[in-house]
Image 1 (cartoon, rainbow, N blue to C red):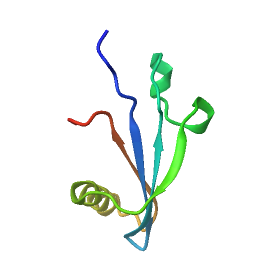
Image 2 (cartoon, rainbow, N blue to C red):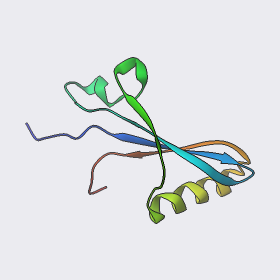
Image 3 (cartoon, rainbow, N blue to C red):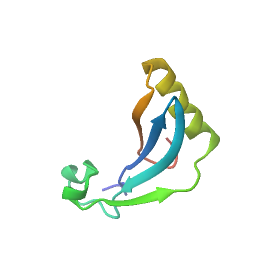
Image 4 (cartoon, helix red, strand yellow):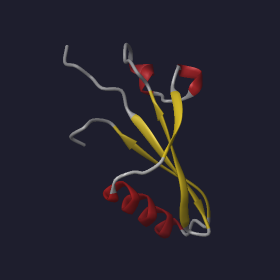
Length: 83
């Protein structure tokens, strides 16, 4: 079977249409399809991020703009280094 990397969820916290901070949820291992659910109940770990790349920040800001989000969160799921 091919090596599968568990997904990573980056969460942008939006206040007044600006991203004020980021968190990351991630799994360290993948054994079965349900491991793609990235939450604490399924063994995910959480941490604050100090910075993200420009493309990631732009995607989150644009998503918040399109949704008219003034206060809330934008989740971005990264499934592999190539995509």
